[in-house]
Image (cartoon, rainbow, N blue to C red):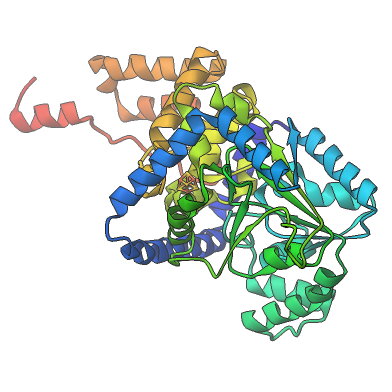
Length: 458
Ligand code: SF4
């Protein structure tokens, strides 16, 4: 089945699931409330957003230079940077590292790139022993589910289902509360950190001038994932660069306030290859830089601004579409929500993923909350324009819109009896409207007819 068909099918299912929608909305609303509280920490939020947007824009416009600077800095400090053009490339590099280092046990912390490349399934298929160390990702892994949201991946799961799974897999009590579940999972994971040969983490930011990697988290598991391992592999996309370590002062807090409402997340780690005087830490440090279609975005005139995203998730939390049909999996793309809708068609191909640009009300709320001022809703319109220019519109859509235009421009047609208009609309749009919603009825009389009647005009 095509991505668009799957998207429509899943979206329809989610829309019909009232309980799911209420749960999703309530979690997302609570994140938005936390963001509104968190941003009060800034004496001048608008200035902070402008600074953040400018810094990320500067990097984006000179990405070739900053990436090479980052690589040079990592190499000077004894680390290595691997350039992965696409997913098979990235997976092959990881396989080669595991083979060369003879890693038996692998621990992994939260990483959007690991999800994008399907790392867990790939390594397990090859017989590797890999453990998820993020609590939410651990739960999803045990439940055989995927991440729904960049900050709260297990948002989709009901607590009684989580309880049943953890009871079966790690013998947690069925009556345990959230705190007890977390304790049980941590107890289960703990020894893996000490036994790991290889630690795989994501990265929130890559620092060009000194080759550091910055990781923001609340559980401490990312730090532990490489603290005892001999080799630390960082998975990052090419768009994660900040020019200098001083920029973290702004970006750590922008990320935290806009993702979880904290002024800073609990753990903010700046790591990299070990210095000669360091007593401990991984002896090998490798950063895998993934492109996977991001160069296509960079090649666009306007929408390349999407690459300045810092993955805070704030745009998804306020998106009326995401609140109804989230999360990421519904969208059939690497990411869901407004940023995923902007990214997807340009990263994965307009011909197959243009539906993402259309799945938006264009209310502009996403743009209002974005800490780096990405013009999300207008870029979605630009994506749509691009799609039309490339001829991705379906014949059925063209006919529907042609008919709509004719209809709306003709006073005679607009004043036809409601029965005829209702019949015509149903024929044109019933498939898109779906079976689970009642098709809206057109008023018996048009505004024009009512006006004429009221004022006695013929
Ligand atoms: S587009 Fe903006 S609001 Fe959305 S995740 Fe990225 S940085 Fe956050």
